[in-house]
Image (cartoon, rainbow, N blue to C red; front, side, top):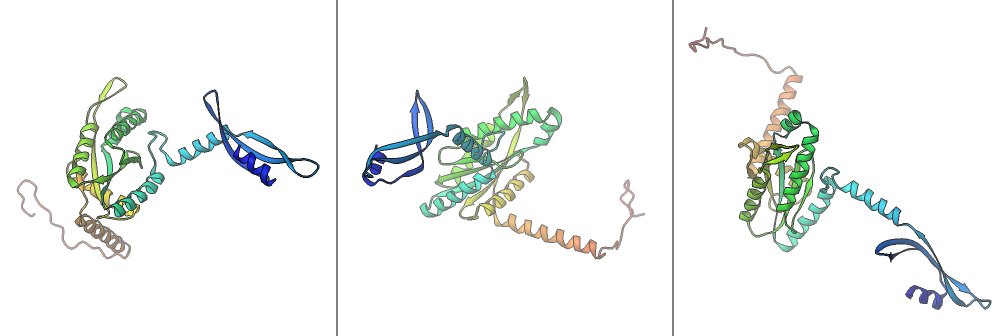
Length: 272
């Protein structure tokens, strides 16, 4: 009625606006136009309203947007939405001075399950893992699936590193509980890398990289554990990258040659 009064008072047309109606408990969306009905003295004596039902189109647009930002298999946010939310979490942590953390969780030996029991079993397992992760993450955090068997979890409003360790321990415990898939019990474990916000990094890409380094440190430490990022990990990663590049250059430039190759009797250990 307010729009009708505006048109009656001003005589202007209001084109292409959306309006919601509820009919029998169902919400409908219409694209509407309102224009004045004028008498012979050019005075507005009424309002003509036309509407086009665009409920199905709006649903399709929302569904398309959801698919673009969420993982189809698990329904969790994907890497694109994670990056958006992570940027907000970084800003909130800096402004509020409350702790936050980026967790990168990767399932251990997941490929073995795909190879032995098939990808369908692997997909069911991934969905159940996602459900267990969401059971641990509270309303201050969020989780995303960013790779085949890789999940990212952002924790916010943390008191100290101890609370992060407690959540990581809960995640490892709940993921490690048996799964029943197709009537067969299945076990899986996970490795978690942790990067602190904003102490370790203040950009989504950097936090993902550092948490990834910490996650691989957890895997090299025996798997089924979590590891916090430390600058030493970054130093080792950079050094290994430089060594790899130098070795590639040495191979391309024919700079490697055999200096000495001893032949040893494996029974006695003597050089022969």
